[in-house]
Length: 326
Image 1: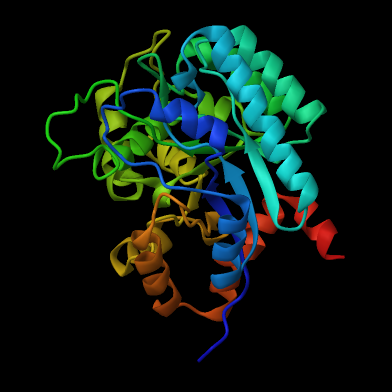
Image 2 (image 1 turned 90 degrees about the vertical axis):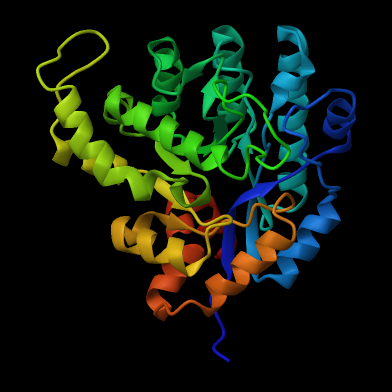
């Protein structure tokens, strides 16, 4: 059997005990159980799955579960320093995407961006797809994007619960269908608002193979050019469908829970190959991670492309990792 390249996992969550305690004290409408986790469990999973380095991140619902503004800021700081300590103890095994307060807390976000990049030397940040009923391209978030652009930040965008989709049935938990849609909505909002092109130094990774974005990309490009034709105001600007397509393809795409042949066929045909990254969604993916990783491993892909997706593209995004190999 062919031996495949080692991996860099850009979609790897941690659930420290202090975060789990808060989770256990609140009622989450999504009704999704949170898995147990420890640093040892992460490293065991990595060792068993050919992963050299994992970029640690906070999953949905994020630090907003802490409640008030000061509590959220305190939880974010505690999580970031925990991730920093873990990376410091195992610099070859771990990196981290720093957590941020909700983007509607502009003062708190700007302060934390400065702290995590200037003091903790974070590898990037995690953003969720929406905050307070606004997607990531909202005008109110423009100063945040400017700060991230100044740092040439790598940004991992993770879906969270749709503010417009109520919990209606236990047979439709949001991660099943709504999370992929939320990723596509957030990405489209960033492109059509002009924010993606406005801040070109931000390198944005979309979770789960871009959600439904690759499937809808042509529809978005062509229909948006038709719908917004002739509209010029503070919310819309005329965009040609080729320009929209170019911007949609400028995202990076992780393969977390996206290793099925159907998804891989579409993504590899549509997305630039140097923008595809491996992701596991550990520990939340559970047995689904194992199944999708197995189909990814058996997928017919030439060795050079597999090496790009498994590690080379990530090493280009995170030069620090190359230094540790020297």
